[in-house]
Length: 279
Image (cartoon, rainbow, N blue to C red):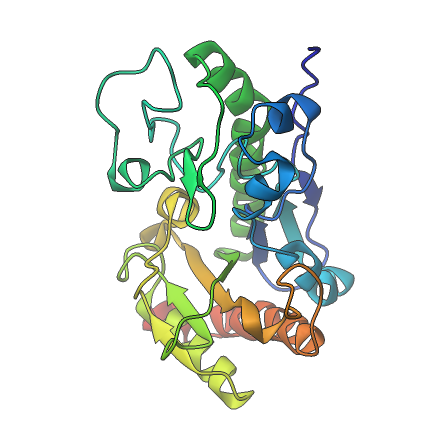
C-alpha cells in the first residue's frame, strides 16, 4: 500500500499586538489510508484520541490576529505533545524492551498504543524507520514552527506566551478548566492565576495542575526565566460539544470566546509595565 506523507502543521502567523501564540497539537483529523488500514477498529477507534474540534474553538482568536500552530496529522499517527523518545515498545517493533516514561507505559507515548474506550489500537507494530518518518513529517515541523513563532514574538515584545489548547473528558466533580504550568516551571505562576481570574469572571470553574500539569509542548517551549511562558489549558468537552462528543454543542461559542479572552487578556497582562516585576 502506497504511503502518503503525514501533513505538516497549519501555521497562522501572529498579526495581533499581543505576544501570544496558540498551540493545538491534538485536533488533527487528516487520517492517511495506511494508518486506518493498520487500526484494529478502523478510523473510529483512532478518533477517540482526538481533542475534538479544539482547532475550531480558536476561530475567534485567529480572526483577531492571534497566531497559531495547529497539527493536521492525527494524534494516533504521531503525538506532538510527547518527546521523540517517549516510546512504547508494543508499538515500535525494534525499540528497547522497556517503555520510556510514564505516559508511554500507560499506552500514550509518541505513537499511542491504546485508548481508554477501544483498548489496543494497532494490528501490528511499526519500526523505528517509520517512527522517524512520522517525526520528520509532522512532529519536528510542529515544534520548529512553535519555536520560530515564539522567538519572533519575544524578539518583538521582549516576552511571549504560548497557550497550549486541549480538551478533556468530563468527570464528576472536575472543574470546567484545568490549567497546567508544570507546577510553575513552564510559566510564571501569576499567569495561571490571571488565567483563572479571566475564566471565573466568565462563569467557568478552574483547577491547577491536577490531573493535567502540562505535557511536552509546555515543557519544551516554556522558559519563564527568559521571558517565554507556556500554559496548558484543558477544557471539559461537555462544555462545548454535543452529546455525540463529535459535533459542536450549545456551549461552543462560549468556549471559543474563552480562548479569545485568554489570548488577549493574558497578552495584555504580560505586556503591562508591572509584569516584569511580577515575574
